[in-house]
Image (cartoon, rainbow, N blue to C red; front, side):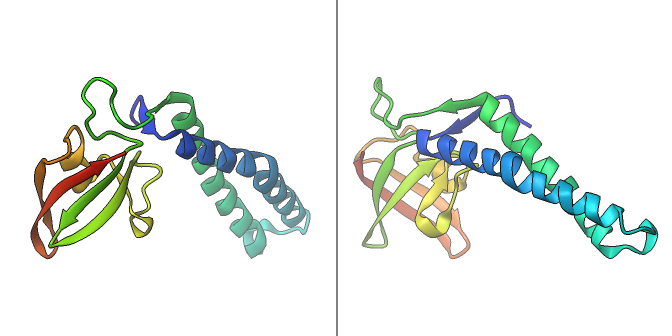
Length: 154
């Protein structure tokens, strides 16, 4: 894993809430389920035991990942005060193919393209980072190269 993860304040709070939910609610229930399955005897043919054991391993991996991200997160509040360029936490309005689209630039752990939250490490996010109103960027997309014109930054 990387050493520092860029996140918005909201994204960091959401990851902290998920981590708390996993540690305080889901993991204890899974540990109980595993203990109950273990008490049923022959573990080699106990599918509930195997299932609970695999789920616990997966959950522990997610807890480890989230712990690392939360511990090393660098919160970005959006527009860079020195350059007013696009950064993590920025809301940017662009024009592409004659249509206005609003994107939120977020850290990779917060990305949700369906809701227009794009990672600063995605091709479009990288192209937009550091740019200002009036700048144009070209990004390779599955449909071909698309040109984005930056109309507004918040």
